[in-house]
Length: 155
Image 1: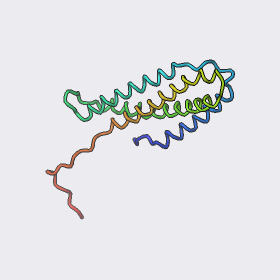
Image 2: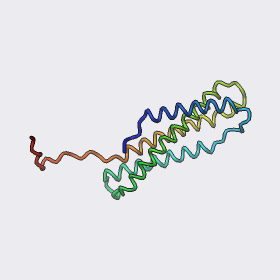
Image 3: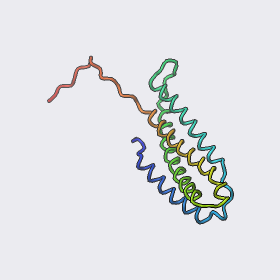
Image 4: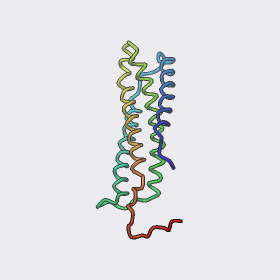
């Protein structure tokens, strides 16, 4: 399994930003007030994945006082991290489109919705960062070269 590519996350975010801009510019008049719950949920996921990254890295490095890590758990964390990074990028792009459109509008309703949209953008970016961190924390560290083992013959 390869690490998540930054280009994949950027393309997903740009596509979601375009969709977000289109949705809000088309249906803003009919939309209710922006909810805060998605921001709280995304932030909670970011905190949990950040904690998992710290704990997993410590267990993989076999730091004192840490139990050995279960390889199946690490594989599950990698899958979670890859999915969360992509989902976070999509949410970040969508919220970025909303924030840009709301920032341009000079109405009281847009001013009232802007804080919820900005918090959603910040929480989405935090989720992407935590997911990438968790994915990198799950990597097996490089093993030092053992000088006692003979080198294979050349030729």
